Structures are given as C-alpha cells and as structure tokens.
Length: 69
Picture (cartoon, rainbow, N blue to C red):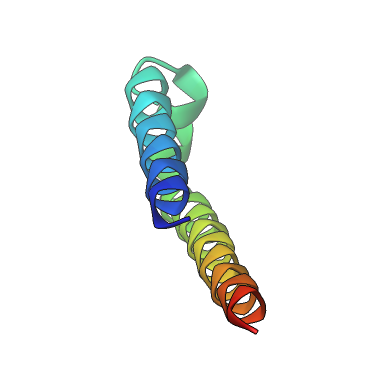
C-alpha cells in the first residue's frame, strides 16, 4: 500500500512540474505573476494537495488497522 501512496505522490508532483513548465509561456501566468496573484493560486493548490495526501495516508492507516483485526 505504501508503494501506491508513493506513486500517487510522485504523479502529483510530476504533474505540478509539467504545469509549471507550460505556465512559463502562458500570457495569463505572466499577468498573474506580475500582479502577485500567482502566490495565492500556488498556496491554494499546495493546501489542497497536502490535504489530499494527508487524507490518503489516514485512510491507509485505517484500512491497515482493519486488516489486522
């Protein structure tokens, strides 16, 4: 189960890197960066990603506990 969690985390971070590379050429990203709004977007995305990762880990722990019983 830990391998699947690690693979999910890897896929999420790989998609973030890909999104960052495509955003460098986007005029919308340039406008958001110049206005300082990009930091709000990044903070919201990181909060959502961290919440999802913590949720997956907690569900994994609960399932492991049920499997032991």
